[in-house]
Image 1 (cartoon, rainbow, N blue to C red):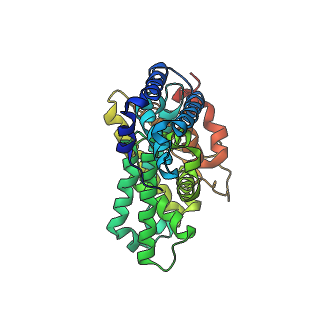
Image 2: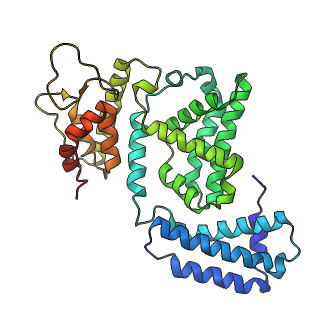
Image 3: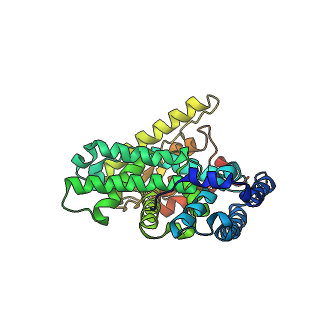
Length: 345
């Protein structure tokens, strides 16, 4: 990623000759920062404005004899300035489900907090390197920045640190080694507003800047998040009983955290304790376990997810159902769980 000097851009915009462009930028911000638009609508108007204004910058006397790098710096400065000012409207826009998706992903990462390096076939010594903690911090820093470029830099820093650790400790540093490490870093770091930050980059970062190395790392992080969202015993090096035991412990902690957050929420387990994952009494003899883990589900763990004192979205319910019992549980239990969660409201 090319070097960037935001201060240089700001200094040029203070010149008297830049008054016209500055006025247009401020007018756009004033006209749109309070609007309630969908993410796609914000993307359309912002990309159109950035494109038009970038053309004006290229023809302006302040950049008349500018080099390609200087023009690129101006375009980057324009994007950063505009998105800093539009951040409140464009990050987790009110006409989106970003907040509920963030909560669903945060719950999922919390539930999978028991995953260790060996479960992902990562040599434990790799994760003992202090640099892995630095990679986690870089990923968490995304939420502290407002400009899409700055958030993307955090992703790049995280991934480059992981590559450096791999190169320092192993003879291999390819995708097969990199991806599990990125999954582990994501699961362990549990970055705040991860879904929203990834969406913000994808929506408002200059598409031309999401090519090459930055694009590769960004796409790989998207894959790591998707892997974490669909993680089950079959995708880990772990026996099913240990997975189910650790999963129940994690769900119990989630229940406790929710109870502390909302003392009025109370969930009682069903009188019969457990039900078959398929929603029916299991037949005598051999019955294969669902791929989601175990052939029994403790229903009160799904119920507690509906009453832990936080907004619950469809993605959390589906995730819990499929995680415990696969599609059969989803079909058998969905209507009751959905009503409890209020997702039909």
